[in-house]
Image 1 (cartoon, helix red, strand yellow):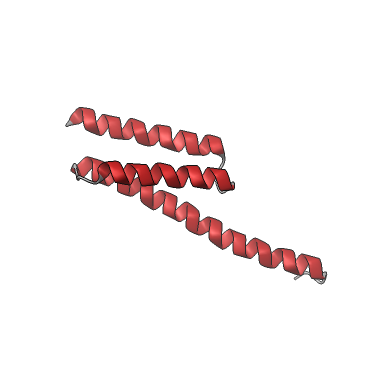
Image 2 (cartoon, rainbow, N blue to C red):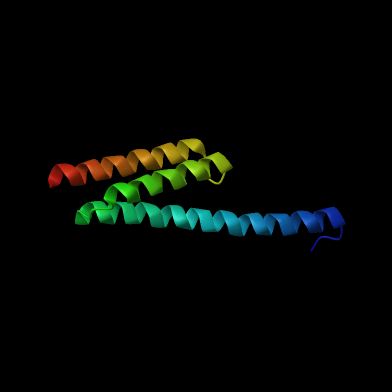
Length: 89
């Protein structure tokens, strides 16, 4: 454990950010899975689920939770999977 006051504060800040980033990454995974499952089931709100997934990816990239190229790669892979589902049905 740190003895320096500034380092103690930095540790508190890092822990708050870690928890916040973990929640954001978890939500991204959930949104991506939801978008894919709604598209596969042919639900009416699949476009809305896709929009929310892309929005969360963009927001996470803007805040630095994930890298912008990682967000672009995930969006690209999601779109490819969804177009494959649409082509199959």
